[in-house]
Image 1 (cartoon, rainbow, N blue to C red):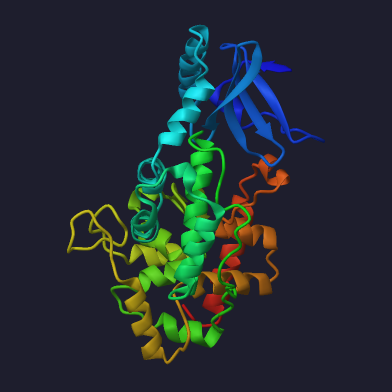
Image 2: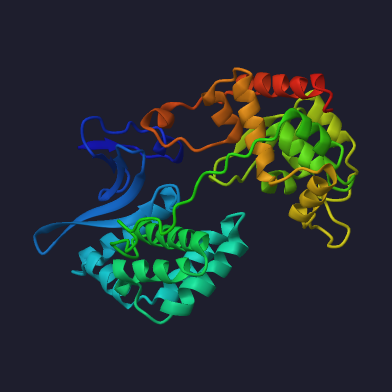
Length: 376
């Protein structure tokens, strides 16, 4: 049994278990509070106690969601209940059994979804596809069969949407488990309703050149930066001037929840220098004070039509940058760092190196390649 003086900085650095599924770290300051670290890298807060002579464990939630101070506060409440003869685990189980799906969805949206870039889209999906069916049902009453029937019904009219809805339901229940609101995920072992082939469209150098000069001046800098940096269109679109630190763009909130540092090449800085400052966002709009541009897909499609480029989408710019860098000899590891792809391997948990120098070298070579090909 490991007892440690837990601090906020120490939480993410505690060693993961080797040769077993999990390891418990007991808080020296508050006996009964436990940080459980799993071999896969997950960390959660627990309270261990005895009720009527039997050992019990109460899960509070994930460490990346609940702070150390909050965990200690919740643990004190639970241990206070124990001292009065109340089993906090039973209280929690009873509360979970009374929780409706609507109440669970509301908590999920408020505490998790609204922090995401896709918040509005996810909220609409939950309302239209999940709440419309299960609003008044108990959250714990949703079964695997319910999920399978939902997927089957949606796939009949919108196959890809069925995949997204099941994925959203899976995230909702996974979050609920991490918060100790439910114990089981009804989406477990439910396969993806529809097979999706990964899109493979990569623009050729000649297509890049044609498209680069076909963009409307109002939109050109946005798409050019997508290509030069390899970042997601949504992240470039919401770039703020305050996120730029010299020749580095710091993205505070990315799709996978991690901060991303993007080296800005000479060519990228040149593109930025030509963007007029109209507000907080680099790509600000005059129609809504404090807002950013809308309608990038239509703008991209207009440029493709003008350049006579078929079957291209904005996200293909990111894939093209990655594929071209790979063809130039850039390692998959560095490309993954540039794209900010999540690596959930055990090795990644220990690898905290920033790769800034490698990313700068790779993006610099990519920009020079574009310039040498007379694209810029």
